[in-house]
Amino acid sequence: MKTIDLRPDRALLKPNFDGYKLSLEPIPILRTELAADSQPNRIRPNEAQYSHLHAQMFGLQNLLVRDPWAGGSCYFVSRDLSVCWAQYSELSGRMLPLAKVFKMDAAVSAEPYNCSVVFLSEKFALVADGRDGLHVVDTGDRRKGGEWQKVFTLASPEWPGSCVLEDGRFEIVNGERQIHAVGAYVTQEDGTFKTVLHWVKIAQKNSNDPWVFHSSQELKGRGYAYYCTLEPKSNALVVASDKPFKFVTNGESADQPMEEEEKEPGLPDAPFFSWIQTSENITITVPKVEGVEYKVSNENCKLSVLSGTTSIINEDGWFAEVDGELTSWINESNEIQITLFKTIPGIWPFLYPGSPEEKCDRMDQDMAPASNLTSQLEECDFGTAGDDTEYTIERLDGTSTETTHRVFLGGNPPLFRVMLRPGFPDAIALRNDVDACLWLQHPGTTDWFLRHEGTLHAFGYVQASKQQRKFMSCSPDFNYAVICEAQRHIFIYKANYNTAGGLRNRNGPQISIGQQKLVSLDGSSEILGLCCENDYTMLLLEGEILVLQLRIEE
Image 1 (tube, rainbow, N blue to C red):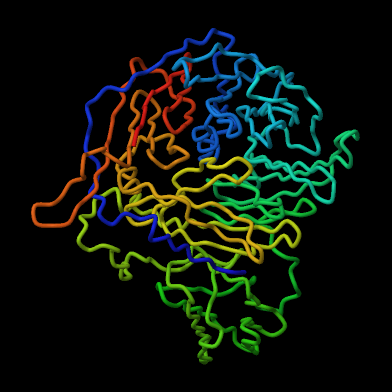
Image 2: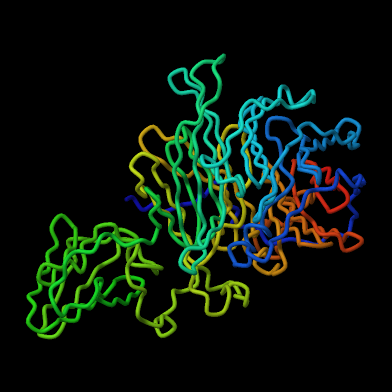
């Protein structure tokens, strides 16, 4: 497994950015009332969907979907399970009449999820009804409108039914047309709630042949997938989460232990050890049992600890890379102490999948120094009190079912995901000091990597103070970013303030400032969806659609 260190492109940073200035200029707002049967279909968690994972999956889903192949077009699913087309005309500055382009017939489900839509190409889309089926539809030319035609439906047992569609891709491999789709849902196993990612592949050998189910795979994890996309060519799944995900085969649980080996009499259940860490190294302590012979080896950077014939540690898949040449141990009469040195400094959330939890209180350890000691830190910069969650991005290969690449994000979760370019996976926004950097997967010739595409200056800092935030996004050209609360308030941060000649400190160099605007909506209607274009922002509310006409000009 390869550990990747994300290094921002200095050319995309702005060290002289001096914050945002509040602008009181009003923003024109267009309102389009929705008829009763055209209001968005909003599913709330029921009595069986009470976990924190359920709350995240229902609360963070954006119900307004942007079409990257047709500017100004957004879609949502109405109460009668129809896909509705909402289009804004930049020429006239008006909303076009709402149109219903596709109707679903879904069965009643005990644990339904909200409907979801993913656009695969200029003429294909995936629609999941959140109850029992996944539909492949031929949309035709979406810029001209017209009804969508269903070409294939995938149902149980190949498709889990009650789930949210996370991502989908359309590929042509050796003349064969392929569609990959990933759905997510929450399940309960042995009293523990887990997130399941169901990855399916359907294929069409020739353009005149019917679509057929090809294969499926499942991944499970105890955390929430903040970012889940298929990489280009659909060879792997890229997941950002607070807990690791793992491929599951033959119905096994992601946390299910391997088949137990015969143990020597009197030995406790393996693994029998404890471990503590600093940002630089890890200390593993293995207590000894009297009368049992212990053996430690470190061959080919693979640590192995045996007690008799029982393997206590036999692991090379550490959470991150360790320096095998520096690994050392002390064999005392009552215990064995093993020291591992980390290749990249940082705090690990676990030692390896299935290992015991760390046996220490890191509050007693020295905290890492602040990246900028001249910046004043606020309470929101420290995260939730007592929360030591560590976030990662992992590339999980569909062929080997192994984690091939991992990126450590520390204690800062991903901010949001956004479609920047048609045909590419969604970009992921990550906090980098006070900024927010957007990273995009690129199909490298030899290896997978994330490339720094753009920067939202000081956005990582300002979003941390918005404790009531629900949705966040940005324009495809990175000129502005939006923070949207569940009700009423929308914060807009524009990168440039349009000051003639720039600003200059009294005795210093030229500085750059941005513009902040606050939009307060009337009423208490909940905001269900957000879509950002370069010159305007569309909002989906319970009974209306709003267009914020930003008219950003350089």
